Image 1 (cartoon, rainbow, N blue to C red):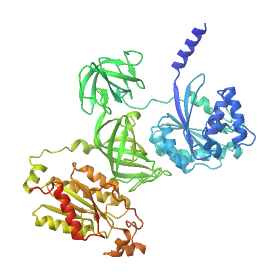
Image 2 (cartoon, rainbow, N blue to C red; image 1 turned 180 degrees about the horizontal axis):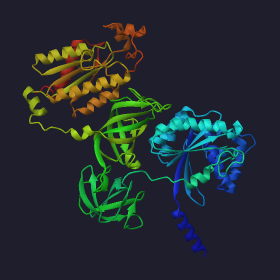
Image 3 (spheres, helix red, strand yellow; image 1 turned 30 degrees about the vertical axis):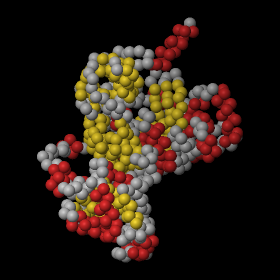
Image 4 (cartoon, rainbow, N blue to C red; image 1 turned 60 degrees about the vertical axis):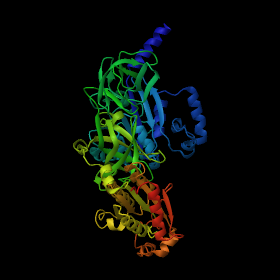
Length: 628
C-alpha cells in the first residue's frame, strides 16, 4: 500500500503545473514579508524552520516582538542586519493545486540587475506597493523590466493597508495610477488586490477587514491563474554546448533543448552552416529516448558527418531559427560605466559568444512615463532600444517567440563582467540586402604596385604631445622615399568627416570608429595611413586594431607628461580648459588611457620631433613595411 500511495503521489505531483513568479517593487514594500507570511499561513513551514524563525526574529526582527516573516527568505547576513533584500532568493513550495517557484528580488536601485535575473525566469510578477507611498519610480522600473522579459501577467499587491486604516479610497487611487501606467506596457493583464503581508490580510484567505474587496486572496489567485506558454511555433532548438567525441566511433552533440521536441528520424539543420541531416539516436545518461523535449539535456547523433561546433544551433529543418549579424534589440544597462554606441562588447546568447558593437542607440525609455526620448548613451539601470552589429551571423528567435533563443547578455571585453541584458526584436532588413561584392583587384595587387606593405601608423597621446608634428615629418620622409601615404589628423578630420561630433565620451568613441573604418579603406587601397589622434580610450584603439589584419596596426604612444603638454599649449586649449571654457578636455576633466603594449613609445622631452619621426621610420623598415 505504501508503494502504491507513493507512486500515486508522484504521478499526482508530475501532473501538476508549475507557476514561476517573482515579487518586486520598491524598497521596504514588504516583498520578503509577503512570501514568508504566505508560506506560514499555507502551513508550508516545518517545525524546525519555525523555531529558527522565532529565534532569528528576536535578534534581527524589524517588527518588535512579533515574528519577522521576511527572515524566511532574507538569508544573507547583510540582509538580516539591514532589513533589506540584496540577492535573489528562490523558494519552492506546492499546494494541493499547483507547484510554485517564487523569486524574492531586491528593491534597491543598485540591485536592479538581480531583479532582472529573477524576471528572466518568471511567468508572473507580483508588484508590491506600499499603500502609504503609492506608485514609485522603482515600481515603474520593475514593471518595465518584467515586461521587457516577456512577463504578461501582473499582480498589483497594495501592501500595508493596515497602516492606512484599510481605506478603499487609497487602494482605488493606487490601482488607477498603476493601470494608467501599465497601459503602455503592451498586452498584459493586471490583477489588483489590497493586502497586509504582516497581518495576513488577503494573503491566503479573504480579509474580514476589507469586505469591500470581492476578489480572491493572493494564494487562491496564483493557484488558478492561467499563464500561457511563451509564444512561437514551438519548433525544435538545441544550442550545442559540447561536441561529445569519446572515441573515433562516436560523435554526438550535447546540450539542453531550448524549445520544441525531437525524435529519431527527424530532419534537422545545423546553423549557421545550413547543412541538413537526420537524427539517428537521442542519448541520455539513463539510455536512449524515443522523444526528447524542452528542458531535457541530451546528446544527439546524426546520420551524416557534418561540421557542428559549440555555439551552433540544431533546428527543425522546416522551421529553422533566423540568422543575422545585425539586429534590433531592447537593452537594460547594468554597469556604472555608460553604454556608448560604437564601443565593442561581447554578446552571449544561448551557447554562442561573439564580439558586437551597439551601432545605434535609437532611443532610451523614460521609466516614469514609458515615453521614448533621444539619447546618446545609456546609464546604469536605463532601458533603451538599439541596433547591434555582430562579428558573425547568429542563430536566434525573436524574444516573443522564444525566451531561451531570444535573450542575451553583454559583457565587458576586458573583465567579462556582465554590463547589460537584452532581448532580440528582429533582424535588420539591411543585413539581408547587403553582401560583399567580389573584386578582381585586391589589397595585395594595390600594395604590389606601390612596393610597400600597407599599414596604419596610429599616433596617440595628449593634446600638445607632438603627434601632429611628428606625423607630418614622418609623411614627409616617406614621401621622399616615394612611398604612398595619407595623413589623417584629428583636427583636420573634424572639419569634414567628423564635423558633426562633439567631445563627449560618446562622440569621442564615434570619432575614432569613423577614422578606424577610413584607415581600413586606405590600407585596402595599399597605402600607409598615418593617423594622429588623441584617441583617449584603449577599447577604441583595440577596436581599430581588430579591424585590420595581423601586423597592419602599429600603435605609437607619444608619451609626453601632462605638465609639459600644458606648458606647450600650442593652441591655448589647456588655458581655456583650466578656465572652464572647454568641457571634457582630455587630461583635465576627461580621462586618457595610455597604451599598455604599444609597438613604439616616443619620448618627446628627450628627443626632437625629427628624431622621433626617424624612430618610426626605422620601425617600419624593421617591420618590412618599406619593401623595395
